[in-house]
Image 1 (cartoon, each protein chain N blue to C red):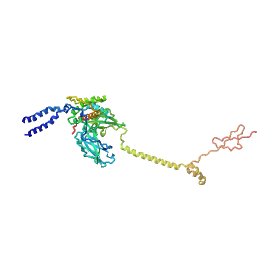
Image 2: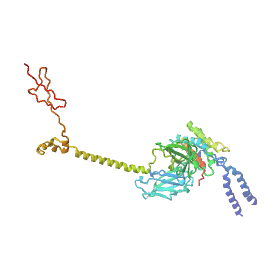
Image 3: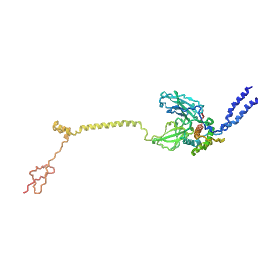
Image 4: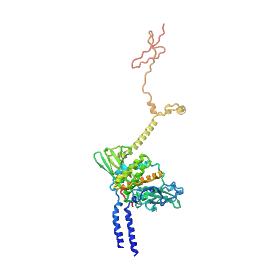
Amino acid sequence: MSSVSFRYIFGIPPLILVLLPVASSDCEIEGKSGEEYQHVIMVSLNDLDRIRENDSNCLNNEPNFFKKHSCDDDKEATFLKTAARKLKQFLKMNIHEEFKLHLSIVSQGTLKLLNCTRKEEKKSSKGQKKQDEMCFLMILLEKIKTCWNKILSGTKEH
Amino acid sequence: MLKRPLLLRFLLFLQLPLLGMGLNPTVLKPIGNEDITADHHFFSFPLPLHFLPNLEVQCFVFNVEYINCTWNSSSEPQPTNLTLHYWYKNSGHNIQECGHYLYSSEITSGCWLGKEEINLYQTFFVQLQDPQEPRRKTKKELRLQDLVIPWAPKNLTLHNLSESQIELRWSNTYLDHCLEHLVQYRSDRDHSWTEQSVDQRRSFSLPSVDGRKLYTFRVRSRHNPLCGSAQHWSEWSHPIHWGSHTSKESIEPPSLFALEAVLIPLGSMGLIISLICVYCWLERTMPRIPTLKSLEDLVTEYHGNFSAWSGVSKGLAESLQPDYSERLCHVSEIPPKGVALGEGPGGSPCSHHSPYGAPPCYTLKPEP
């Protein structure tokens, strides 16, 4: 019995301590002045907004992705990294070249600005209805912009 | 004996959440297309069978100090006290009713939310509902970071950078790096404002100014683009002036104004009065031009007395009398040769009173 309690009490906490670095962000968000965002990423986000303005036939339902990933306090960088990687999947869609270019700028620009060190495995996606993918993409871009606004304001939500 | 394993298991369960923090769900669970699959809101609204189509609720975040949501109840055919509920998307659907309504004509027309209710970067939902008919409602989804309206800039000051260059500075009560600014300036000789956009810096310099002109500056701010994409600007700041009052629009001294206010009216009245007096004098002194109608009066009333009838005064009539006399001189033709000079049969006696000597008088003798 004492060996069991010894394992539970003294074995698991060190394991947690080892795994804690995994929980911390490998990206940098502190000290961002916003110039790179304003002159590069924001320009492409606004152009994407302008291009997709006429296409707003989306239902007001939130995809599951955003239930798992959100720009909460202390998770902004993690969310942006995930969202930027997700954007890359849409580069394979059959969409206008100008649209793809701006998507690429937002995705690559975000990752470069965050200077994330860890690389993740690429995930492949099955085919979905184009309209669903476009609606998801629009929501994703909106969330990315909001998260950047939050980071650059330097405020914490309560 | 059984309690100890239970206690140990309880400790283990407590530690599992800590263990879960270190695990990235993206590693354990592959992200598939189920992420794109739509999921209905927990508190989703059915397709509205009765809604408030003409009602538009507008919300603005004033300097991130409070939110004002307003609607126009009078647009409804039967205005009622509508209720407002609000919540944030990730707040566990913690729906709250407005705690501070605004009224217009004793009917709810808005809602005031304090600073503690503001989460700029979470999706904000607001719903208007008719409490008497709960199925009549309208819902709106808002991005509060795009609805921020900061207070107007203040503490405007001007500084001389050089002889001809001045710098305008101001301050804002909200986060400086979140705001962009618009500066307007003009001189007293300009008819319109000149505009200049300014980024997050709180200063603007004008490289070349004319010291003889009077300049006016004003500034307004907007929550854009780093921390939000707001479209509405703040109010204009109080204007600030620089320069000299040497223009034509300079203010007159009060004594000159009073002088002009007195002299001009008095002078005008005097001129009019003098003109009236002259007219009256002329009316009295100048005779009337007789009309044809009054010619009868000359005979019947005035018995031929022309001066009395015409209205000419006696003195004026006498003055018009000639005061000189002249000798009459009869003139006849010069007779041809042979005609003796002498008194002619029909000739009138020659007057010998002419200062030039007696004029020759000629008579016509008949020919033999």
